[in-house]
Image 1 (cartoon, helix red, strand yellow):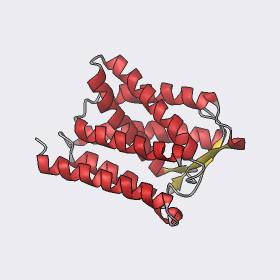
Image 2 (cartoon, rainbow, N blue to C red):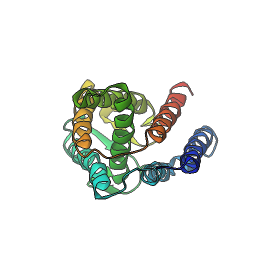
Image 3 (tube, rainbow, N blue to C red):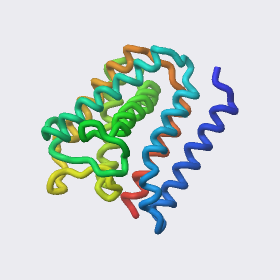
Image 4 (cartoon, rainbow, N blue to C red):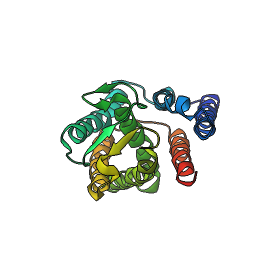
Length: 209
């Protein structure tokens, strides 16, 4: 059983990082704060693991599924223009392997986990949960794409985001969700909701400013 102290501390850390990140990027030190993006994503992973109900090999396998799916699809996209369209990554997501920042694969895992927890609250059927999860991930991507070039995360060729990018996010996200659910890993839903809301508020802020 996860203690109230542990979850309260985790939620505090999420919002401390999130609010600090927003204010930092809006300040004159935006470049410095953007370079800390890998640390922020790592923090989400650490908190998810810290609050997991069944930290085991099963959990690690569940995490690895969307991580690997993310790497394969991103590798095909970056190097061959397949699936999402033709794009390339900038420097603020950290170390790359085959042109793909490893942190973007971590991002695939984090988004899959938190949207899986969210969709499990909305419906009980596994297939519908997977489709809902993929749809929510697609909505997040629509919002994130606006700020990605500005943050030097990634940019599509000629700055044009093809519709197939969003279709691919929905389809691949749904597949990642379905496979992830087969492991039946137990993560903390309350924590996932806070991470989801924090990410949404973060990128929505930069739709405005």
